[in-house]
Image (cartoon, rainbow, N blue to C red; front, side, top):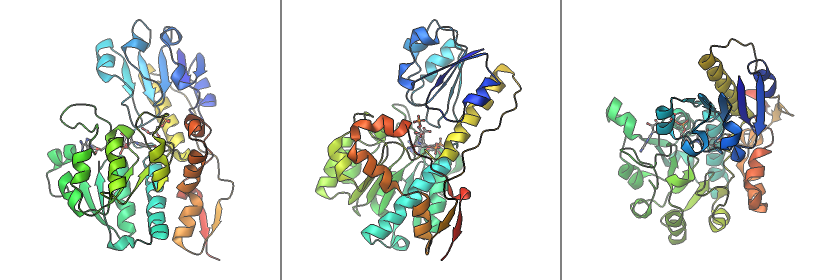
Length: 347
Ligand SMILES: NC(=O)c1ccc[n+]([C@@H]2O[C@H](COP(=O)([O-])OP(=O)(O)OC[C@H]3O[C@@H](n4cnc5c(N)ncnc54)[C@H](O)[C@@H]3O)[C@@H](O)[C@H]2O)c1
Ligand SMILES: O=C(O)[C@H](O)[C@H](O)COP(=O)(O)O
């Protein structure tokens, strides 16, 4: 079996050596029709557009994306061409929840906001949204949930309309997939109309996909005070992002909310498990993230402890210093671990 693998997928080399006969590593943006022509499988990230243009005439029968999002895969074409694809649901949800937790703590610390007097609206309550809701409740926030597909299936008891969130919330955070069309379209879900409907000048957080928020409308909302601030991890037109927005927001990071090593290891393991299942291969591999350099954290308060584990300001500083290195900052991301990797000691 021949597999082409995105060369920025970590912890994969040894394990895939036990599964495939031939493995070729290339940058995600360099997958070409000629390269994939005689491959049986691809293991990709969000940087490879898997569509007719890339795949037609190839031998590819299986694609695993080591991500939760799959808006870079033309699923209709894959269906038509008999290509099976998988993503990695939940792989990095704890990582995004860690990003949100540190962000909310910074809102408290640097903006002097009392979180227990604030209402947060969560748009998209799947793997990430559920964990973010738990974090926010633990911080004492009132939590409102918006999830159209879930509301349709489960009834409206636990869910609110986007309009209600717009009226009630001090923070609104987006955790929806990018759907460019259809009943649940999320492309430019937050547009000028949405921003004009906000009542409490909330802080907007986006770690979903850049295209879920209309950049021009967001900038205008920031300039006119319709929103009081923004935390942006995902951008329209990555890596050529809007620099005015980058320097205006409270925190701006290069699409790394899901980049804990724990999340990356989960994604790699899930992709290989799917590959083995598809080809009926049994292989023995173990994928785990490296230990943190300092697993013991000395901190006087939970806020200090959590920010020592992960502080998004560092990622923001790095991006602001070199926005032209957006992809490099992601590709060479430093080791970041989730809280299970640490023990906290109070001095
Ligand atoms: N920044 C990052 O590093 C990062 C990391 C992980 C995920 N993401 C993005 O976040 C998205 C969510 O991740 P997840 O793991 O929770 O995915 P998920 O599929 O588990 O959950 C998505 C939820 O959104 C809901 N939804 C769909 N359309 C909606 C709509 N129109 N309005 C309201 N809710 C809607 C779904 O019902 C589902 O419950 C991913 O699709 C991905 O694009 C980004
Ligand atoms: O969809 C996802 O899982 C996330 O957006 C993920 O963090 C993107 O990761 P990448 O494609 O850079 O590996």
